[in-house]
Image 1 (cartoon, one colour):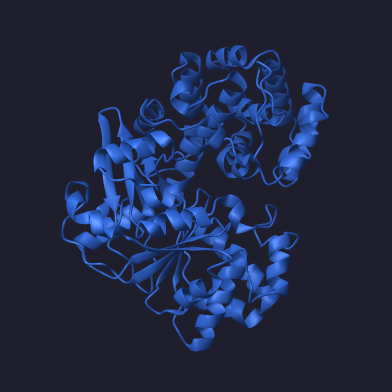
Image 2 (cartoon, one colour):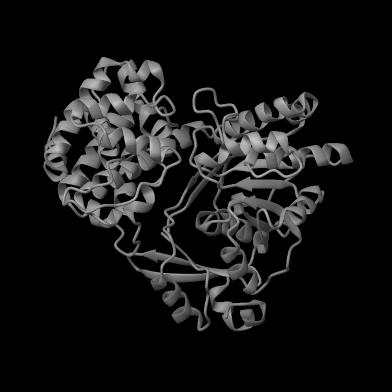
Length: 488
């Protein structure tokens, strides 16, 4: 079993044999695969380049004791399994010092929050984890977890409630605040999190809200690395390379990117030494990534769930679908972006398609298709709005949305069934199932105000494009893909 005692025999799989066990300086909420293949790896490399106490305490927020137990049995160690066209590289990561599972580890978590050596709290909790009202951006006060945390502020379960409780404790103790670092795929993620937390604090304690607004930094980031769910094949690959069993390996592609607004009053690791870009404004990078990568990822996922492609590499191996995504990025997405001159969108497009085609990375379309109600607005609807505002066509973007509408019926073209995983699953699937025609399907789902702003839902050009796309999909997704790929 992978553990601290086995490290001496694994130097070939460690980034360096020189390693000083660091004190914990970062608490990370949402200790999933992405964080462990991204921020944790950057942090270890940064500490090797410039030593510091930036060890990580990871927290699962869903009471997932199996992940906690697997990682802590291994002394926090795990391997990153990079799968590329040229083969597999396995690296043992040592930056993770502790794993807690909420609600069981709440007391220990708040001990960490109170420790002034903890100077950063980072998050990968997905869009739904922010508990935001999609219309206002404030905390969603109709959310059962948010309501619970307002009534029981000493037993918080949501991100806004947990952070406010931690800030209150540090304020009351006279301890400077930590920086809050969002690493989720959400436009302006730092500001989005700041608004949700401060709006919650205003309901709870206006003086606390003012303290947070005055003293706490919420830098935004753009993160990028394809990190699928772990499979038995990944565990077998890790064991073959290491010679010991790793119950928590993380598969990923070789590519990675991290762009960070450099606002850390309490300090930070030297992430730039590991290749991160520290900038004044992350917005151009994050918008490009959301619209070029995340939007096309979702498009591939929904069309693939209908057509029967299991993985992203299978999907782009279908030439018409690859052509459709190329045209979507080139003609409909790229013209909406305002990026620095050094950012070549054509090169970025081609690199994305090459990454998607990586046959060694089995990124399941079903995984990407989850939580569409949260992903659709920042990934695709924002681009549609920009195109409509400019009087430009949106046909391929509309096909992406119509594919999601059709996907919500839970039935592929061949009649096979699949489950819908989404915070609004019951409402969305009921709307889709009760709609007998493309027109009624479009109208029923455009009426979901949690996803579609009223002004966009009322736009006749959008509705017409969606009805055209839904009609084509009704007659078979492969035929629709072929037609839209050849569209001028």
